[in-house]
Image (spheres, rainbow, N blue to C red):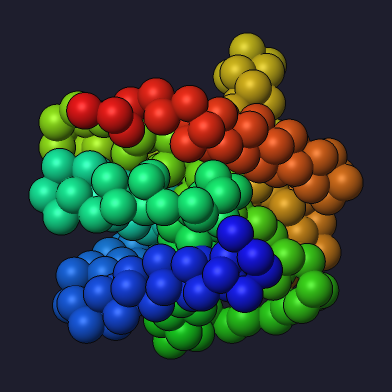
Length: 258
């Protein structure tokens, strides 16, 4: 396939899902906005004044990066997992893509880009909601934007891996519910790892989402529990591993050939 054909294939995959995301906005965006508002109301407005400051930062401002990452991780992952599952078992258009000369990396890029679109838009939406509950100060816009996009990329790839392997609809809901959600909540959304006992501090450092949240938090506050370079390295490793698995799945057809 020539470059123009690959571009058309990529654009077609992205446009199809981007239109779906915008068309059903009450399902793709509204729940995240409402959930974020409730979190900010409870943990920011109600509990924040009692908790006080963390590293001289008001508590309601401290939780903003973690809650944004909560929306980004879950939405980018579930979007791609759901779209791939539907392409396999409902719409069945994955069959047409597989028999076409479209290279596997173009297919991966198309599905993942739609996840990045949703994850990034949800992150921006949650930030807008946060502005009503907490003062927002950005220490480094480049780091904030970089972690927002790269996190969406990483977990879109994870959603693609999940969507390819899933055999039933339950298969694409188990990971977000029983794996991603606990990892996010235990990754330092609502607290600094420095307040934890030594054992739980060690356990937390094994959680990859802990580094994602801290890198994003550094972009807002200028400090984090781990160096931003470490967070970037973990995120890059996550992208490399999940990207390699995704390409391997598409090249071999594992989980796609029914």
